[in-house]
Length: 400
Image 1 (tube, rainbow, N blue to C red):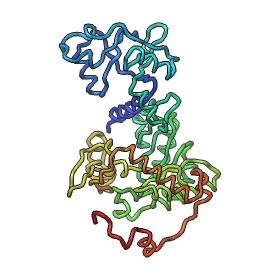
Image 2 (image 1 turned 45 degrees about the horizontal axis):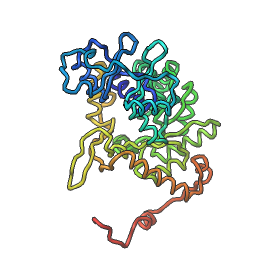
Image 3 (image 1 turned 90 degrees about the horizontal axis):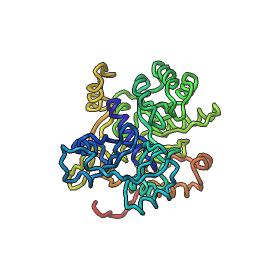
Image 4 (image 1 turned 135 degrees about the vertical axis):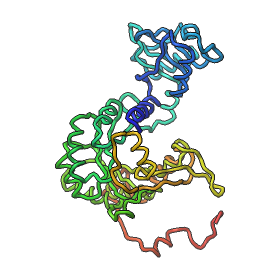
């Protein structure tokens, strides 16, 4: 993405489910109805507070603009008698106001009538439906953004909105990247995640060079679309990388969350990474098959699939080259592939399935939480014959 595209995507996440939306799209009373409709379509919203300067003077909804002359002014069709709330309104108070007045949008204004934010019924419903969502202190969804350690302008632009910046390079254990990251963290305030690394030595060098980091992403070459290990024979498979970095952190007496990156296809795969010392797992391939991911559904052989490309693939590299006119291809060879993954349905269903699978795994390990798992989990080597025995066998499965 361009910097502007990425900032807008982050802002969309922050707006998606917040009790009071602070970064509100607005329109002036002298703008045309056509302009208002265009804004609503562009940002997929159903209403706009109308402001003069910073004062709220009305509100415009899709019902107001339906069948209206697109050349007439917003002032002519907006609702002028607006029901509002104060900045200290509670969720229950907002719900009562919206019910009593049969409205779906509740502008928040200060004593001087200045617009401070917007409450929508959709956001209230979402908060009540997704009670386990990870939210910031203002009730907004947490969001991280991927950056290059050399792209200071991108990092600074995103720093205003994100909860974390993730250094997104294939091989962080490199003097140029380490030094760039050291300079970058002095310029941003968001949590900083380094990576990817694959060894304990890489972790120790990172600690020595980079002033601060709040997370470390580990694993090289084991992503579903990655062919780095095939092309270069350089790799640190996820389980190896997690255990290496976990041991190094313990040796240094540091408590930094490890993100296991690569090879997670099932709750069992996630469980192995967590048991080895990870706190979090990347699930790019899994979520790529969900309804919410980019790309159209494709039917192949009677089954549905969604497209997925690695960031080292030729098309992704060409996209990055196109958007940055001063960039040059870092390497002359692709280290990723693109293709299709099985369609999995809605992300909520996938998350629930993973959650249930992990709960069962934790039960088998006798662990109450991830830290408890680190102490209680034991690893064993399973042979090829053992793996065959652990699969369903001596039975004909439907569809086979």
